[in-house]
Length: 168
Image 1: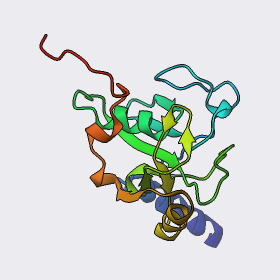
Image 2: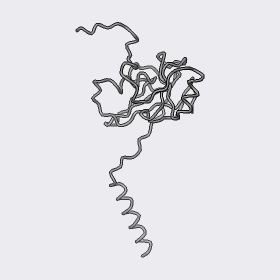
Image 3: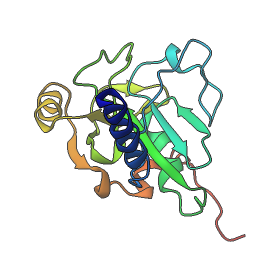
Image 4: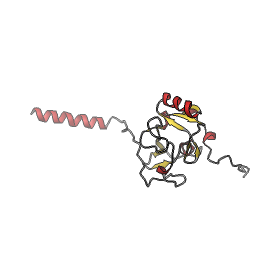
């Protein structure tokens, strides 16, 4: 009888936990050798620097070969798709030339803009989980420290400085 009561309590606790309304923690996925950038089709693992990924509310996930591309998609004014999570890599914990694992919430990361290191498409933002790691990186490679909410659409413009006719 005691065993049955214990089992009933465990089942009830599990059921109530499932009804708490809390969403399970979303995890970043590690890209494999065939993973490509959603923006330009480049193979992610062939290039240096931090990568990015967006998990949309519909369950679709897209990878990006650098942080400029990731942030340009996230910040564009016409972005209407619901986003559940956005991730980048902690460069304080992985190698710049071949970054693997160490995914962090991109909205909580420390960003370094204007360093002497490049990503897949040239200049990019270095990303860090800890301010101390970002400051150490700045001492070695230059740049300025930013938080996610300080990054603007203009900072991640993918036009590469090309002059575009906006009169149309």
